[in-house]
Length: 324
Image (cartoon, rainbow, N blue to C red; front, side):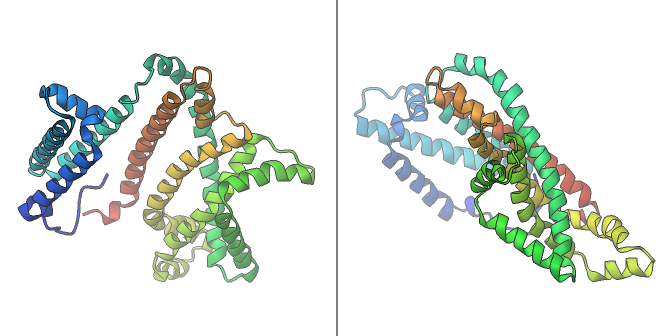
């Protein structure tokens, strides 16, 4: 996470003219939503012993209590340092999501029985497909970016056609075309290689533009200086240009990898036992679909958080020269 900011924004939430109308809007939204009937609303009703009220009055009282709690929370958080504000708000929102899931009356015994299988089989396969695909996609992106930056008309035409085709066709369609289309040409491909090929080609097309933009962000003077020192073009690219361009390339590439981690669930349509496929099938035996869907969602979320943290470390590493 980034906490430093070069812009001094006005503290709008600290002004009553903004703070109070927002709380009023929140109160009206909660009252209209019938917040007293939700799991959190029932918890507030029990906590403050709001008994003997009519349903309408109970709804108003619970909405008012929730508004007061939110207002007090905002008033306290706004007085903390920026880093603590971010962590507290993040944890509070995460807790609300977990409470929302808990209100579904889940069978935790069923989740406990299945979660090990989901992780050892489904998650491992998901990570394997995603890691191999992002590695191949990065190679395709670098080749495509260099082709787009070259003065060779054939290479430029091929690169433009590649990015246009694979960004223009839905990923699900690409998986079907590779898995069921190649056998029409006499080449039978397995479900996992087909999924990896589709993800690599699709994300390689998107990442081509990321790599091209990163390379173009480096001033031409860097190329000219390297040429004056007698470096060959390949050495200039690998030793001079790419290390500087990584500061621009890493953030969107990290986002692409996180997106790929979730889009890998699409390979389940051809029978790959990845996380989403197992979550969908394991819940069928006892009609516990929601338990498996929520568990798979939380696993995806946790690994997305880990990838965000890793991305932040890599960004800081390549951005050392620009740190203040």
